[in-house]
Length: 405
Image 1 (tube, rainbow, N blue to C red):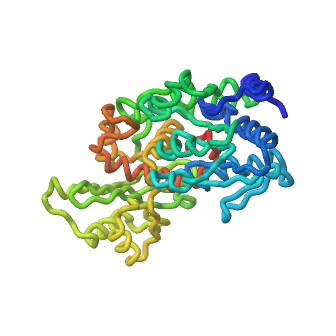
Image 2: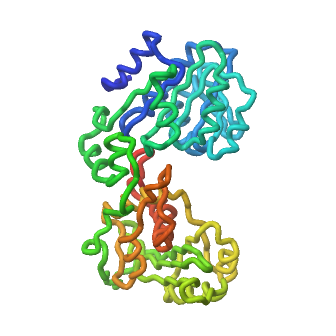
Image 3: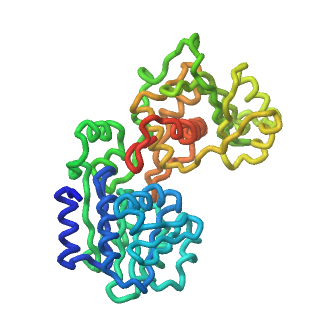
C-alpha cells in the first residue's frame, strides 16, 4: 500500500499504540481520509480479540455499503472480509461485525445493550447525537476504540461543539485531512473538484472549515449566463420531465424540463399561490395545469414533492409516471449549486417566478443547523427535486464522496 504523508502519520500513531478511545478523521472531500480510515480499521481489528463484538455504522446501510464495505473487500480481499446486507453482519479477519444505519433519532435503540470492542462510523455529522452518545457508552471493553470520518459542517453542530471543541478534555484524537494532502490524485482532478464547489460548500468540502451557511443560497446563479432562450428545433435526443412542489395554500410550483443528458433546460413553468389568490385549487385542477404545461411533449416522469400523496394519486390516474422527489434539502442544494456552477442548468426567460426566487432564497442564519428560510422557496424546491432525482442519476461524472451530482 502507498500512503500520503498525512496517512502515514496516522498509521504511525497506530503502530506506536497512540490511538485514542475516539479517533476522528475530518476534513475535505477526496482527501484520502475514508480510504486510510478503513485501512486503519482493518489492521486494528485484526489485532483485537476474535471473541469480542464490533460495529460499523453509516447514515444508512446503503451508503455504508457504497462508501465502506465494497472498499474493504477490495482492500483486504474476500478471503479476509465478507458481508451480508440482509443479515446486517460482516466478518473481518475472523471478527464478527454488526452493520447498522443511523438515520434518525430512533436508531440509538438498535444498539442498546451491546458490549463492543470497537466501532467504525462513516460520515459522522449525519448521525443523530443520541445515537453517537449511546454508541460511546457501548464501547465498554478495556481498550475499546472508535474510528470515524466526517466532512465539516456548521460550527454549531453537536459534533463540533460537544466533542471536537472539547477534544483536549476527552480521550480523543482529531486529525484533519485536506484535498491537497492527497498527493495520489491527478492534479487535473483536484482542480476540477475545487471548481465544482462554491460558497459554504467550498469552504467546508475543499478548505475543510467548520463554517456557517449564510447569505444567499445560490450565489452561482447569474441571470446573464443562466437565463436564455434555447431553440427547441433539435429535440430528437432530449427527454422531457416536469418537477412539482405541491401546495394548497402555499404556492404550487411546476417546471417543464428538457434534458439532453448534458444540459437541463427549464423551458416553462406554472406557479400558483392559493393564499394570494384566496382560491385554492383541487388536485384535479392542479393536474389540469400539469397537462397544459406538458404542452404535448412525452413526459418521461413527473417528479413530485414526496409528501403530496393525494396529488400523486391524481397524476397516476391520468397515466403519468410519477417519481417522488429526493428530499434531502442540504445535499440537494449542494447538487443544484454544482449544476449551476457547471452550466448544466438553464432557464427560459418566461420562468419568472423561478428566476425571482433564485435572487431571494437565503440561509436562516438564526438556525443552529443548515436550514433555508421557508420563504421564496417553492420553485427552488421543485428545481431541487429535479436535480436530485434526475440529474443525479444520469450524471456522467458522479463521484462517490466527491462529486456533487
